[in-house]
Amino acid sequence: MVKRNQDMAKLQAGYLFPEINRRKKEFLEKNPDAKIISLGIGNTTKPVTPHIDKALSNAAAGLGTKKGYSGYGNEQGLTELREKIAFKIYNGTVSRDEIFVSDGAKPDIGRLQLLFGNDAVIAVQDPAYPVYIDSSVMYGKTENYNEKTNTFGSIVYLPCTPENNFFPDLSKIRKVDVIFFCSPNNPTGAVATREQLQQLVDYARKNKSIIIFDAAYSEYIQDSNIPKSIYEIDGAKEVAIEVNSFSKSVGFAGVRLGWTVVPNELKFDNGIQVRQDWDRVLTTLFNGASNISQKGALAALDNRGLKEMEETVSYYMENAKIIKATLQELGYEAYGGDNAPYIWARMKTTKSWEAFDQLLQEANIITTPGIGFGQSGEYFLRFSAFGHSEDIKEAIQRLKVHLK
Ligand code: MLT
Image 1 (cartoon, protein in one colour):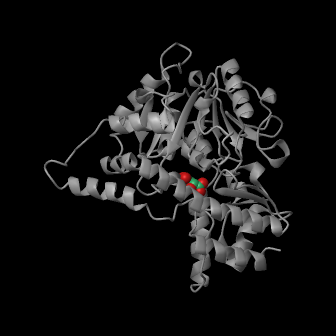
Image 2 (cartoon, rainbow, N blue to C red):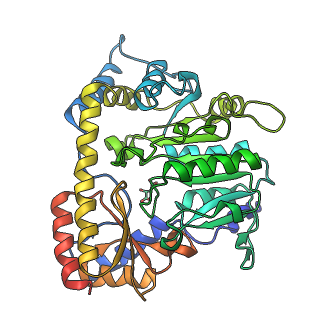
Image 3 (cartoon, rainbow, N blue to C red):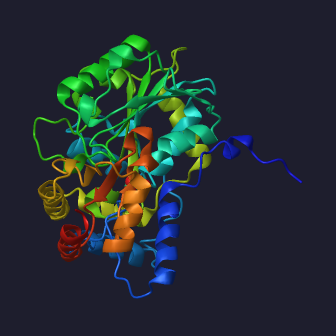
């Protein structure tokens, strides 16, 4: 028999969301009539708007014609789309050639790991989107949690809690090579201020680190003082890669489309452009994003599409507002939800999985246990605002009864 990849064996447990689904399935087997409401995975529910839908349908129909058919496209994405992202999202501060269209932020996060040597030390916020850690472990980062240094072999955890305003004290961390940073944050819903992001960029410049800035929720930022992109920060182009996605802003979670920005200025220690290697990774492992999805994204970035994007975001943000207000009324500490579609609530003295199970059993509501995002997530639950508004209203009534 073939030996198992030992890095796979190092993974702590199954991926978080399948475990939640397993518990849900088990519950439904015993309670087949229960009407479950999901405030769990950040999965969009609002239909794609008619304008974007039309662009997707036209692209699909076109494939059935000689004129509209296209086979492989550029691995980096449609030139027109790269240009549109550069101008509509980045106001031209990033050039078309620095943008690489993909099948989503999550697969890009996985592939990005190929750029760094096996000995690279990775830092992640704690709590964090599990993909940063799990993909790091799959690529050979080591385990063995060390309580004294709060390190996990070559993974360094940066606790981000209400006590530090969800931003790590960068003056206290050792030199790391790659820092995953997500703002608006999944799972806490916290957003980093301009000053905080400047500290992050300054740290990376001083330590010659690379930031992987996950901006998948940037369209949810309502406060105009909060940067939507790391490239709004001085010096960021020398030290940061940014990943983003159409999943949460226009509901392409299932359509699949995202992009990664790798600036020309970003170099490895030997002077080679990171962009050059990223291009090599994509041309080898990826055949370009779906041509249908890309046509949909072009529509999403025209004036009508952008307006509809705002409406989609407002719809979910209204949900976020009422979830947060309800939790606070019920006497819970609740964070996020103002510039992000996630609310992060402390369950007082109840541990995350216990609180998750209680809400599932009693209120038939699915949430996400904070511990699934890291040690600092213990005692927290994450509530997602991506449901239908009528379901959210019903969920709130149930919370008022069952969450005391
Ligand atoms: C989440 O719930 O954390 C996200 O939906 C997962 C994802 O975007 O992959």
